[in-house]
Image 1 (tube, rainbow, N blue to C red):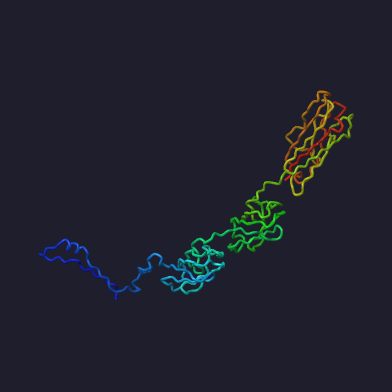
Image 2: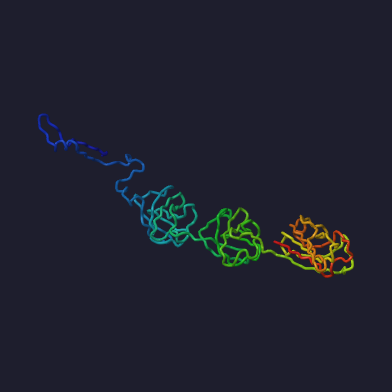
Length: 381
């Protein structure tokens, strides 16, 4: 029969009959009687019995089985797995596989995955942890954090600097899936030059410094942590900074006294020459050339010109040197310094340097025999 509710007065007043305080109280407390049952058609969607709204009783269960195939029974029991079905399950054993399943109320065993459908890592369902699961039509997706944090600290393998790294729990269809994601790993060997990185079996990708330039020998050290980020075309090592290689200076001294002491040096006469060899794989960044010699008197050669490969060097410095007088014999030490940032061919070739006399002096003595010296200090990177 349908549900009926009957209400009767708690006290009926009668004309001419005195009433007491108790009678008044009874009048305010009617009797309510509920009879009958509620049919399924009369129950609203989502309605549950009183017992099912008590704490701890709503779609909660403790899983049995495991650590691969879990079983659980909730009440009220679902007729089928439907998208959006939610339950809270307490796991008593820790999963030992990346694809554990849950069979709810005897329904199909269904794989449990992370919130983003990534496969689990062994240990994600730790013993005694309670996880909220939502069925998405294919998988049970965890809405809660894994029981133990995932730690990425694998060691690379591979031949030489062809680094290969497998990150547990990282499921990707292509290396593009990790675009912008920093990955941390430990190097199994030091870098000896250009290097590549292959993750989780994907194709090898160029490994570069943070600024995109090629990895150099020694950039990555044995057992050192490497933080690599895929930029869409290559992996950039965020902790490998291009600070340049240590300065590589070529310093040479040349003594030239072929003219003797009785011949004046005319304009265009080569006074001293030297060559600075460029280290392999480098380019010149800064060159400084200093030439010095002793003149017999103030009427000696005053100006000098520096050429590289037969072409004058462009410099803001004057070619006129500074002079230091030796008061005892009136001799002069002249020193000229040129400094420039190379351009053109000089950046990638050896420096062939010649110091030439630019203006002859009035003395026929020239400079002192054996006194000429040219020093080249060049920075290459």
